[in-house]
Image (cartoon, rainbow, N blue to C red; front, side, top):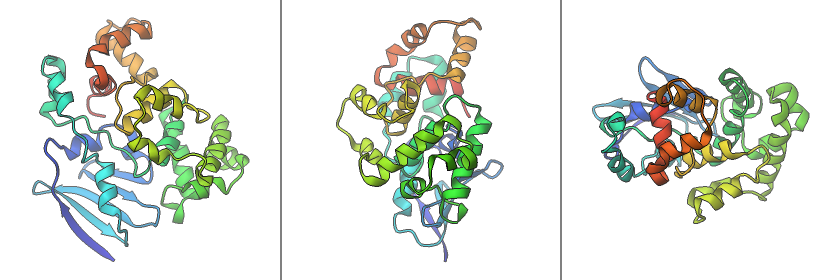
Amino acid sequence: MTKTIYLETPQNFSFRETVNSHGWSVLLPFELDKENLRLSYVFENESSAEISEEDGKLKIEIVGENENLLRDVRHILRFDEDLSKFYKILKSEKRLKWIAAQSAGRLLRSPTVFEDLVKTICTTNCSWSLTKIMVKNLVEKLGNGGRAFPTPEQMASVPEEFYRTQIRAGYRSGYFAELAEKVASGKLNPEAWLTSNLPTNELKKEMKKVKGFGDYAAENLLKLVGRYDGLALDSYLRSEFYKKHNAGTLCDDKQIRAFYEKFGAWQGLAIWCDMSGNF
């Protein structure tokens, strides 16, 4: 069954900026038609949504039945994200005024924190091309119909060796096996991080209890649950900072942190927008 729904967008929302906010849009089960600006996603039950813009609204073409689809689309596109305080802080920053002007700052995310957690592990200590390969293998070899992202139960159903030989996950194989078992058994509930009342530093500690999750991974995932206190420094952000703000010269991470400290609870979003512009 196919149907089309039109959805009103919130104030200061840009579909283009959200879709292009970072690389998630090209990691399965997302697919992006850049030329026509169409974002598609295949859900756990193999229903799918193709999202585009038409007459100032989101046009969502749905294939299959999914009673939670609109809720998930709102989550993916960060409809409920209030960036007004962030935009206010940026008013005194000439080089960053484009963010508010273009209604940028919403970071695309997956329907579940579990999927974002796994994908984040896939970005650690490797090339972007290998990240895409690992995620592609997870979807095609474990997900429903070879099209959806695998559930914790599906990931827990295979041994660690499967991740080494079939997913090409290398040292991450043990991380995936352990994480999937913990989530599938109920020992860990990443979805609770979305509504956690813990201060960010305490929530970060909870995330770092996941094997394979260091400061970068935790601070990256924090951004996807709406916490921007951490910079999530990696080789990309560091190299871009050196070029843009330090005349191409390497510097200590302390200098980078000091540079963005004035943005307070929004510093992680400030550095990402500053360094990446449009992905």
